[in-house]
Length: 288
Image (cartoon, rainbow, N blue to C red; front, side, top):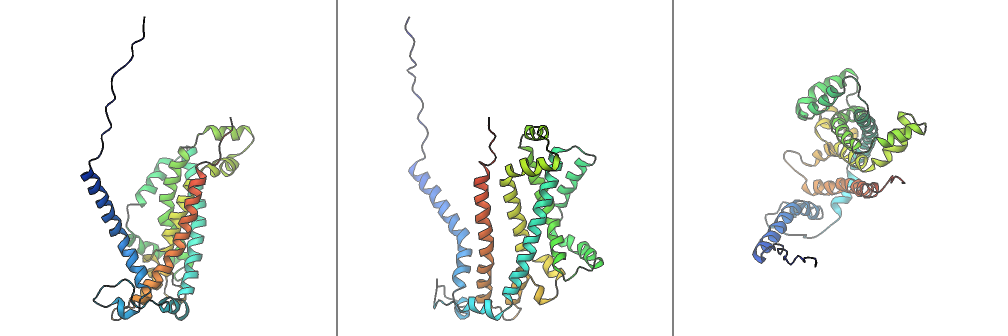
């Protein structure tokens, strides 16, 4: 008895027609140009003298100069504002990641009274826009005598970042098998040692995203900085840049140069966060 051979042919995979392919690529190119154009305009404008930025005719780079960057870095308080922003952003990121990681782990692994209500509170806090929260938080800071201090900004930014980051890390910890916790307990590790030595290294991708989000929250925020800080020497970068756009004489050349300088640290943080995201996916492999 001979085995029957399946002579049926597979259906050819559908291919996109040349017209559809051209239309798709054209759409993607247009979308990319629309997304890149504002960034390119800011970067190119930062090298132009002010007279050419406000000129009616469009030009890429006319009479390029570094005078805008030199003025911002030497003739304004930009370096001081940058230092203030770095301090606030780093402290906010460190505290935010630590608190979000411990809260997310507790919400993921422990079933304690009020757990579901706490998750609901974290979720509800994300529904309130910043303008509504400024007044009550300002009153709290005033009662604590923290107005016009970096601590007021750190606390305010944590109220934005912590709920979201705790929710995100809770979901990430849920994807890590609880068998690792049980194995660590058998080896004599307590809850904190299990979290610090076993679970946290495996959660580096989530930690990296959380740190990046928290850093950006503190680095580019303007509303709370405007409400809480009155001393020019304590301005952050987001608030300080408003000094370049007064009502009657906007200094676009200095604003664009400052905007480029502000973007650089965020890009560096993203670069390192991306590296940890990739390396963290293969970290903590369990030996069989």
